[in-house]
Image 1 (cartoon, rainbow, N blue to C red):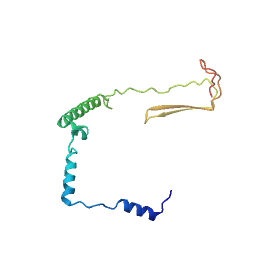
Image 2 (tube, helix red, strand yellow; image 1 turned 180 degrees about the vertical axis):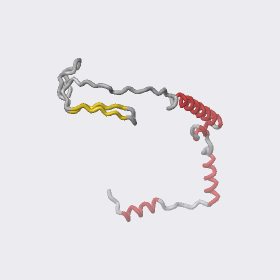
Image 3 (cartoon, helix red, strand yellow; image 1 turned 90 degrees about the vertical axis):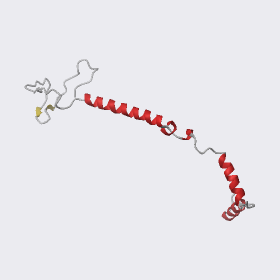
Length: 137
């Protein structure tokens, strides 16, 4: 059932047409009587700290202070750069390669204190002992 816009507009206008007008005093008297039935301030309508009042703020402040104390104490346990004992790093003095390869590159990075050993052209050496048949590539 489709209604044209004009028929729909006319139907809504007729349905929304005001009936008898009430006088002002009767309207406001009825409004005030109905508004008294609805509670204005309920403790249940607040959330969390509002409903609990000052007790909620006290508990929340205590929890925040405890978290701050735990954070500060854990922060103190983190080692700093000056607290760490500096040890001398090992260096590569000799390297032995037991597989066919075309070249060996040993790169020592003094700035980052690291060593990189690069084997180029490594030939297939056979299965790895203790492995399930995988081969070294």
